[in-house]
Length: 106
Image 1 (cartoon, rainbow, N blue to C red):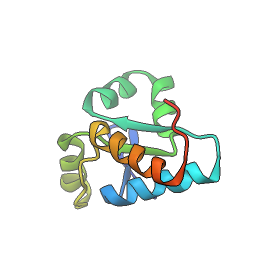
Image 2: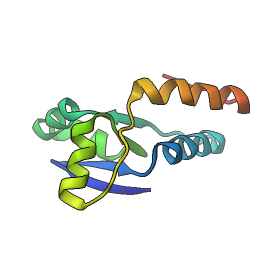
Image 3: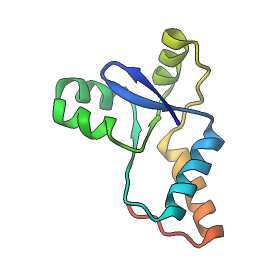
Image 4: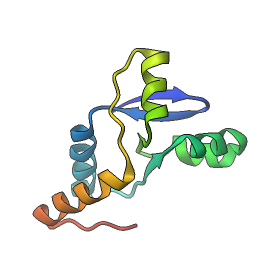
């Protein structure tokens, strides 16, 4: 999955549906990993704290949770990015996980 630099953090870029599919695939692989759902506040905190920025950048997926990040991708890189909000993502992931009998750990 492509990652784009916004401020000092790397944000994943793909469609909403592809985020769901990728997360489900990763869950099926039973690898140990984590996903960040990032908004502007989180990126500013990551900019101010190098250790936190490392955590955000090393996430397998870092979704653009909020229109400001999606718009920044358009303005800076010409990418038409969907907003991938945690409050939308989680219920959809839970539905997919239920269908496939997968576990979710928060």
